[in-house]
Image (cartoon, rainbow, N blue to C red; front, top):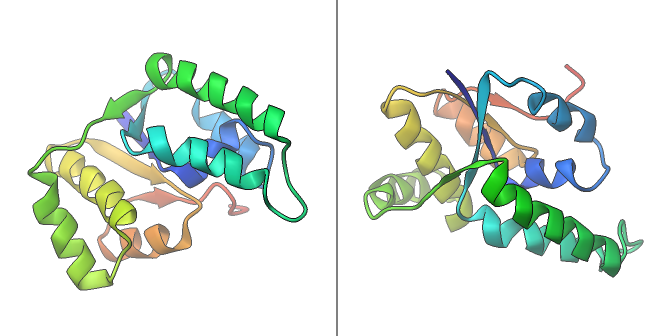
Length: 150
């Protein structure tokens, strides 16, 4: 089975129209795959929605952010497979932080992906985060940026 592991920068595109939204939606049409989200997305995605209301110019209204949040929380339990965080992820988190000076949340996402790959998962990370993208390439993890034209 093929697994797509979405980070927050990519999953927001499912709810807010922006560059890459169409490509993200395409991943969900393939019923032969499992779509994964980190437990961190439960906090990161709502944060992204409401940050967008404060951008200048704002890309969505506060009410639209609330509607996105309601839909996301429903999907979080019904559409995605949640990847929880365990103590043993932190050995990999620390290695990634030491080697790449990553933010902790980025290191957690990558450590969860690496853990699944080590367990034999046919996994691809979907992200628009340039830092995660570059480090995943260095770690030889399959990765797709939905904002890329390819």
